[in-house]
Image (cartoon, rainbow, N blue to C red; front, side, top):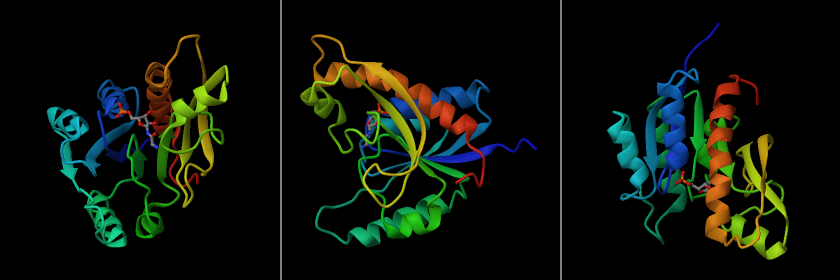
Length: 193
Ligand code: GAR
């Protein structure tokens, strides 16, 4: 049976990973459709990308100092309304909380710009350069309650080149990440977690 996968994508920034997934679904390379895009940033260019493709795009900003668990519970409800088979965190810069994982744990994937378990956290390209590694990469993994600790689904290596700064290296990693995200969604089998 070949059922189309309904995917909600979580984003915070420019959304080039989201774009690669939208493009792959529209080209029929992946048997999935992006049913909604949700961001913690009202002005995220990723939301505009979604709207350009007729995809519902919702901002759910978190105000610093306010009830984080409440924000997480609302995020859970927003995503649940779309009844996704899979949630893809693609450049979403917030940790998902208890309520969210209680509902979507086991079917939420995340992309990360390093070869996990090396260089978890927000500054992966910077940390790889600081460590002096010659090879880093990208990982798509299943989200758990830790920081970039979930089960690894797919990885790709990316060379560190002489003269790289964190931004240049991160952009090269993102080329690999876009392919990995598409591959992870294409290969996703419901209930595989
Ligand atoms: C990607 O490199 C993604 O892995 C990273 O943000 C970038 C998003 O790019 N996310 C994290 O580091 C999460 N901890 P994009 O906005 O162009 O898709």
